[in-house]
Length: 224
Image (cartoon, rainbow, N blue to C red; front, top):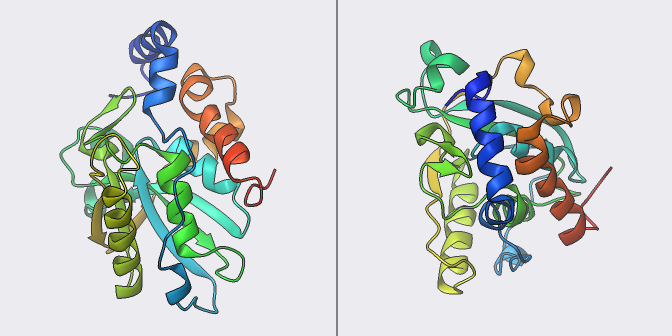
């Protein structure tokens, strides 16, 4: 669905107003999830790193990670498909292989990859929803971690296994763990969307609560 069509925006608003509590309860974990158990066995790299995650509409995921200490930049874009189809209008058809994603540049001396994953699973999205997040439906809204190396792959998969075995969520985690190939920045009007449109109904009901939960659940990681 296109979030820029008036009809779609109205439908989203009506749906959310009618079931606001349900949506807010269903889009993210309501309690802080456990840290990655094997974090101490992972040697952090020394140079600045990049992580690529997909968790539904990139507006909210972008906003969450922009408020995480140690993160220097977040870019909204597309991953999982080819260059020819990396455009919002085409990605929105759900036929391109792309997922709305964010590219996170961070300092591993300030925040670890596993702590980024903890934020991703705890407040940025609901990893148990298959090919959707809240009011947005389609494979372009899937949950995915695009790993750049074996350490990232092993960490992501081990963390998912830990959370599943611990029964942290009410259902199994459906997050795709896929090899990173290319990231294509989204159109300019998608960048830093929450900060530029804090009063937009979609943002108010779907994304601002994620930022508030980040501050509440991870006060030591939160930056204004």
